Amino acid sequence: IADALRELLCKYDVFFFHSAAARGTAGTLRAVWVYPEGSASVLQPVPPREWASDAQLDVMMRGSDPSVRQAAWEALIGRQDPRSRGLVIDALRGISESDAGLRERLLSVALSGGFRVPYDLLGDLARGDPSGRIRWIALDALSEEPLGRRIAEGAINDPDESVRVRAMEVLTNSTR
Image 1 (spheres, rainbow, N blue to C red):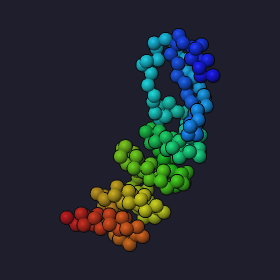
Image 2 (tube, helix red, strand yellow):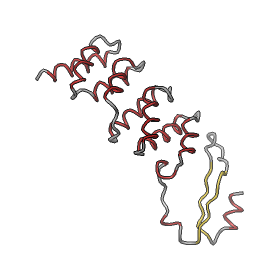
Image 3 (cartoon, rainbow, N blue to C red):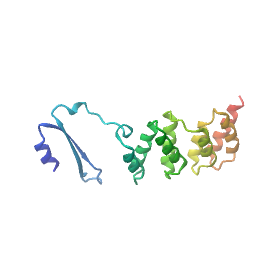
Image 4 (cartoon, helix red, strand yellow):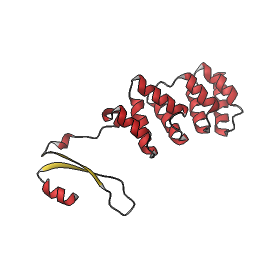
């Protein structure tokens, strides 16, 4: 089909979208975009935060593929509206996203991207998240805040060694 379309559309700029395929097999042709000759050279891909509607992101967030869910969550992190903010906070809390590895990546993206994660949420994550890595990231994010010392005092007995070490570092640095 793709070869026939190439032949038929040879006087146009054409983009073919193929879905992922098993190793050694061709993907399925899912969409064809056709533009007047020469006009598509200025087109560039944009992230979902710029093109996706709320409904599209909602579908992506419920998908089974973690990379698709991550793209949706990152799109919401990039938006500044209250709905998106609430959805991201629920995902970080584990309410709407249960994959700890994905939540860890989202927390890192949120913190490094300027998303204002509420201190009480960081405190909750540092004190009681099931993931040691998330507890470490949250404690680290609070390390320069007054709440960070109190959280670090409680984290001295954390079951995760890396969290205990970071707690000691926070306490040592806060006494200087």
